Length: 349
Image 1: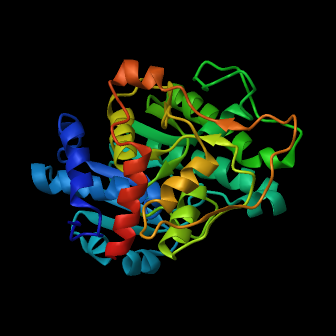
Image 2: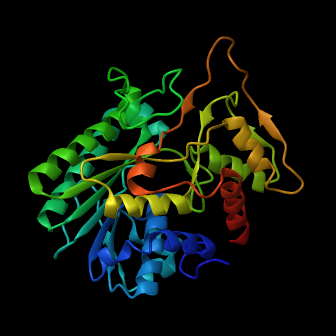
């Protein structure tokens, strides 16, 4: 069964509500501002917010910054038409501040494609940093109490061999002399801005370092391996792995992601980063096999590359010990179930 709002699985919204019910009183009667509210993270945050707003009678409202309100209305008409939602047209780097007090801000904008990083790295860096600066200025000007920044595990740079999981105390970094580090370096600079401006203005800034995810609304035609594998499986296969399939990754389901982000916003320690992701690592090939097994007949998996002798497989896997210990969070939905639910969601549309 799916939600009448935007087709989100009701079972997933039940999952989010059951694990966040004690948080929502903080938002009663309050105003929330979200950048990136029409993307993958944003759709999950908005949908779960509206579910809580309705179920608990919070009387809260959300303003979404978007460059293209018409596109969002076409994508999710019932969400856009909800009386608790206001769409604000603007660029995150230069938007006009809406009037009134906004007690909570979630800055989830600043996605960047690998192509844009290759072709215009300085523009990618500037857009992310300037967007963060502008959103922090907005928060300070509008009396914001809590500010959540969705950063990235990319801030650690390449995961060294012998480091099974990246934790928040790792003193690692991207290669500053490489233009390909534009996205990662911009996320690092934005984290600094959040901490510095938070200290200067009194806005409590929380940081979520996000890794890899799977779930409804993940693009099936982009640069996300999980989405592309699901696309191939839904088409009957073959599921194509462009590399050698040995890279090690981990994937958190979007319903768990929503629980974690709301908890970090409302309970995370100011200025403290928290890793957001799964600790269960698997190879890209194993992920492709999981996607292939979600359709009947089972899809074929094609591995297009071959391993390089003597070269260790890359790894991108977080430690979530801090997040689990300080915030009581856990991964509750397995990657197998996550991929299956995502496949079923696309079939139902």
